[in-house]
Length: 111
Image (cartoon, rainbow, N blue to C red; front, top):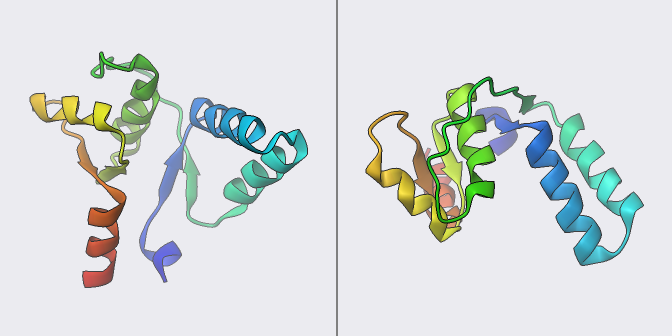
């Protein structure tokens, strides 16, 4: 089971963005809150508090919250199809690997 093999790392900023997107998409604040509560109740979710902002993504600075979370957590990957994360390939430090959802699913299936 994936939940036993991977840890999902989030920050308060990431959860706030998820909540805002869910509220906007479904027009239901309670639904958005319930989804956030469900995420936080998962045994493989870890909340992290980045102490530093790397500001590596310039095309969409709002995406940096995911980079800061990944670096702080020592994550193996950021899983995203967002093209702005391609900027991370320019940096040797901090090294953050980005995988698309398809790539990540392939990794999971081959383990």
